[in-house]
Amino acid sequence: MPATSPPPEPPADLLLVAAHAVLPEGDRPAVVVVRGGRIDAVLHPDDPRPPAVATVELAPDEVLLPGLVDSHVHANDPGRTSWEGLRSLTTAAALGGITTVVDMPLNCLPPTVDAAGVDAKLDACPDPAVDVATWGGAVPDRLDDLPGLLDAGVLGLKAFMVDSGTEEFAGLTDDAGLERAMRAVAQADLPLLVHAEDAGVCADAPRAHPTAYAGLLAARPVAAETVAIARLIALARRTGAHVHVVHVTSEEGVRLLRDAQQDGVAISGETCPHYLALDAAELPDGDPRVKCFPPIRGRRHQDALWAGLADGTLCAVVSDHSPAPWALKDTGDLATAWGGIASLQIGLPVVWTAARRRGVPLTEVVRWMAAGPAAIAGLDGRGPLPRKGAIVAGADADLVAFAPDATLVVRGAELAHRHPETPYEGRELHGVVRATWLRGRDVSPAAPHGAWLLRPPTKDDHPVRHRTITATTDDEAAGDRVAARNRAADDRAMTGPEAVGDRVAAGHGADAGRSSRGPEHHDDPLSDAAAARAALGGGR
Image (cartoon, rainbow, N blue to C red; front, side, top):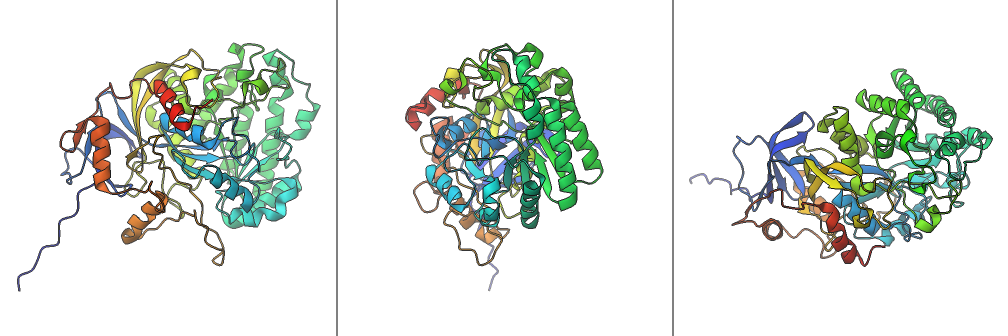
């Protein structure tokens, strides 16, 4: 009986062809093959290509990036959606090239300090525009709940060493409490994220001046950060826990982290766009849009942050997007104005504009804003969650078409954030996000297909949670895994290659399943925000 040949492999869902793609090994031409929501292969343009339902060719001025990961956002959802909300936040993220966010456990009501808080957050927005995960909160009166919280799907814990600003999320200011939190995350092999400002130093500092920006610097001096980091280093050394210092701002803080890392302590750090792009010497007095804690410091510290990123002392650049209604910020007194910088949608162009001036290549910026945050959150492929932040085979097909030489002028009223106030108002920035794909599908606020990413429980006898997302290395189960992440229980699930082909044909003018995108596509993504807000029900 003659041998029969195996049936031909079905066509790929999508091919993305780019003259420039930021891959882990650097910038090179690439053809990215997408099947079932994942990157199936990364080919050279000269390699044989599989048949595909649709092909998208990036314009000559565009670079294909991995979807960015922002592991430090404040959605304030549920309970304070007048401040932001997951729907508007994830829409702004998508317009900014961010395909995964990890929400902080505070400013929402209830705070995410137990399993019920996790459920409340998931129920608040079951259909985000991009993928969402959450950190849990370590607060003094709920330390006994940490094992259950860690088993509820959070990616790690967050603590404050100073007053958080909200009464329901108290600071973990003593070493005994911090050590308990560290031992809990060490047992689960997860990180403890810490707002590192020492409460004692802050208490001894003068009250911020009502209008002078220098008063903010005096109220939260560098010593508050360095004393706190030194305490964390000692505790991390004693417990063996991975401690991650959020929003590092000072030269001295970078130096402490560098020395501890070289000594083998498991401690890492991040910084934020505003610390890299804004200089205290140039900030206006009396402007609550520039208030945040720790405060934006001077050029010496800014230079040290860039150096810390370059040598790996700092591993990530994340937004710390923390908006609030203008009435809470515009109090006429910087001491009482709510602090926080809103920049989620424009974080990439803010950092890229500053990086260009310093001669820093785009590949480095992408490493700090995609792979670095993904590693902090356990989304780097080394654990049970899907891989994010890299254009590699097996990773989720989260991708961005970015025009690094195009420019935009920031107009806060055109951003998808719930509130328009931004310290970047009127600034011209380099870098325009022209398209965003989440698991190989265009992101559309009118038809969101984001998913919640929950870490599987550490105990085998823990009841299965209905939104728990688990990764698998079994190729035969990959379709089921992707379908689960795409809300297989409802109509938002991926419907197959035909739907992908229809989408690309409609969205990019494909001819017989093939399209070529030009610079005219999404010329000004900020202008898309009005339509996005309308789709979300009004925005502000």
